[in-house]
Length: 453
Image (tube, rainbow, N blue to C red; front, side, top):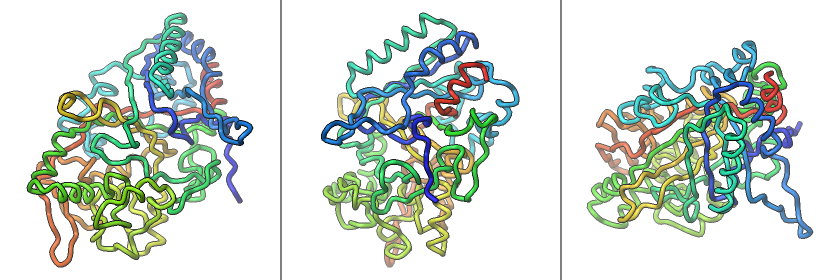
């Protein structure tokens, strides 16, 4: 039986990354008055973008909106808005607790420079975050006008403080700051409007939207009552600073200054060439046409053509974040296992492109993950696949791109016959600057929250 999603009730950010909207601002709000907070929600509720299909013109092409608006809440925010205790207690434990705590921080790799005490947002030394208002636009000018509009509504009603705002802007060719094309591999959602591309895993809707069956053929736990939980989901926000200078210096030293070897080692760490072309399909050199071809650039597995990692290293970022059929001895079981830990990524770069003039400016990725079970999906991937130095039989190899290398003994193993290559002393290229867990309610649930439950 095919899943039928209630697109008009699901917020748009859940099912779309808004690829046509290059500019974004995230407003982080604190509710000082529950009554005025609810009043503001009632006023802006009609603005919140749904996942309903966009209108089509006479040429049958979608008329893409020039702006989109979405909203999410922390557990403390829902409490501040007056949600009843029985509803507050019905959310997932990790959402209620948030990303703080010594044990969780250690498992997540949020230590040393990345420790919560050093965060700009969401840490023990920062102001509480209750709401995240996500604004997306096609141009700087339209985004500025959109942001000003909502700042005016907040000033007029009062009772809500803007704690922080974070701008983001897509880079050329959909790349991230290390220079690799981003967002190539995303799961397809069963019942979603867009058909899957070749090689794209079709994952049960319940992995990403509450109220539908998941990969265990179960309907995951939902907040109560059902009007609050159904068609909602959880969102993980993390601000990840990227040290591009350190990354480039590391590659140059590992390659002894050889430009071609720099590109190859970078691709081995990532699992793809900078164009997005996967090593699994073109191991000997980059193929920009393949990288740009969404019908081919994600259509590969590991078990049959590369079981030992001679093309795509076992510990590369691509292979760790989605092991496909290569994590267990049985490829079918491996695909099933991987399917139970997928997330939807909705992140964007922030900061200017790296060059001599901007080298000292802040830059990185605003990591945004959509999942129905934070612990089983996002936290599992971060703990067991990204940070585990013994992933898939390795010994001291956290994820080379995004893992925790704070102990100073990290290795990147590049499998090769007859002798593998080990690059030792891999530094940390990414520093966590913020982390917050949110709930993204349906449009129906948003009205429920605005009315105090």
